[in-house]
Image (cartoon, rainbow, N blue to C red; front, top):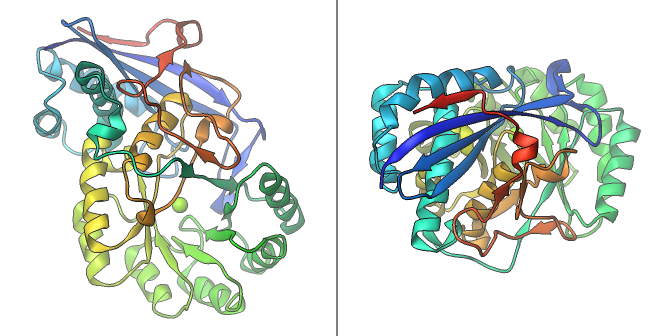
Length: 367
Ligand code: MG
């Protein structure tokens, strides 16, 4: 089987909540997502999606996905999409770095492999563990009372995992954590994700102020070393995210005992092939994971579901159903949240069918 054509579509994804805000005053109102299509000479077409969280979250931006596919695509025409490790070696040889550019192509090739093998992607990634995947809800940065009210309302929808967007003024963040914690029920889990927004001394002070709250602290500071210093001064379970973008730093963090949970995102690692490697390593090392992506719609959510469902349940901390945050559906067959949980499709591949009327005309064609 050979790749004959790679196309990219640009889709705008507005939010039900209108704006999503996090540390340092950063926000997004309409997400700019790239849907990637890989055609083959066997008549099988695969689909992927890459949607950065704006241009100021990770070293990634929406137009960069399209520009990168224009650069990388010609190297992949004529290659076998089913040979995923080989294909990733080729992509790394043709374009240094830029893992998010490669992510959508890699996801689409897993979709092709699944359709070819007549198996859902989760079974190819290791097997289906358990009935369903527990989801968290990200709580956009607002006043403490507004965030507490949102947690209560999402709790009523079935969520039991909440990730607070903090990383703002330290005193307000302390108030946010206390206000939200007061709304929790037994069995709930709360994560305060500062998204690199605190300086080291602020992070230590905040962690001490909420010492008696049952809360996880996620990526408090910009650098790995600052986070490690905070980690060594707090009793809270600790999550690293932005700093963990390849196997080298993952191994270093394990060696330093720098985290209890790691947040792995498909496009941050560079696709399902590479995140599977990191995921399997985490399982072997005993580190639980939040398995997700930076953002996206139906196709990214389907990829997340296959990744999470193929991960042993003890190591699945949480995942995200981004398609329930956005107002536009780009595909049928994607997972739908039921009472705070979702499931990977049992259909071959990702199990999605794109809505071509929503995708419109391609903005990139490589043939
Ligand atoms: Mg995070």
